[in-house]
Image 1 (cartoon, one colour):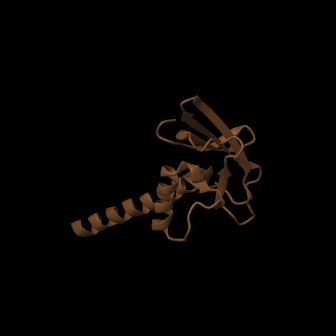
Image 2: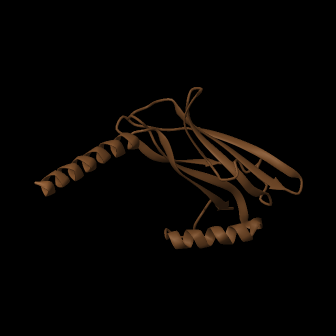
Image 3: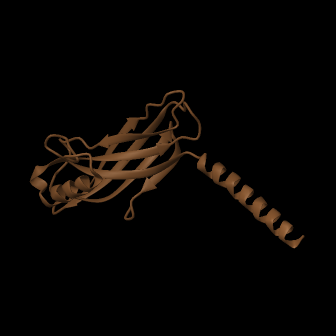
Length: 157
């Protein structure tokens, strides 16, 4: 009898944790932000391999004369399907000998009726980007009008 009760409570706890995980997974959030240096041809990698991407990113970081700009790839998830009017706002701080500058960029998220998750790219314009400046910190906000739905920041923000 005691084993049956223990088994029942273990199943009950497992069932409750699966419901809470689903409820937490249904929120609007920014899952991942990947800053990528882009070369003069607009590439962040030379082949589809992740190892090659990381090696090329290291090469671009060490050879700044080949860098044209930086792009932030953002992985987002919406609370409900077909949520319209959502935008991604990026603030990036760069530093060099001249000082620190903050660059801002925003883009509209294209969602279909059945789409709930996706990737969007925020590219700093080449005219305002200095290749010799170092990326210090960044913040990405998912907004709908003036309401902030989700935020993801770098460690130094």
